[in-house]
Length: 79
Image (tube, rainbow, N blue to C red; front, side, top):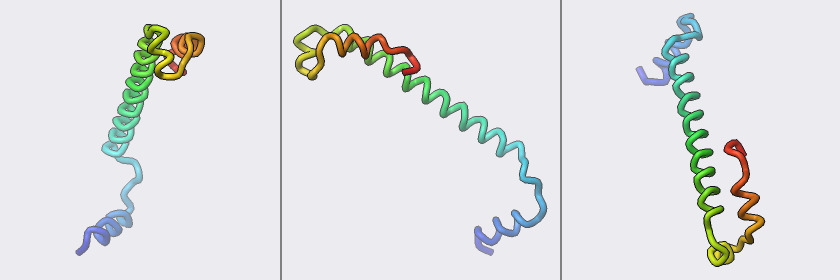
């Protein structure tokens, strides 16, 4: 019996669509996605803080002026 046919026969046995394992897996996935989002935002905040500490010469090297750097540095954690 192939894997596909065994999955199909299991799906037809009238088993309930709710399972604790599936629920836990979905919740764990949501937690992982949330943690990744927070880590990404923390990295952006750190990069913006570093941008605000650059001097005029380094800002010119990357093509920014002080006003743009200040605008980016003052964005909130969620932005």
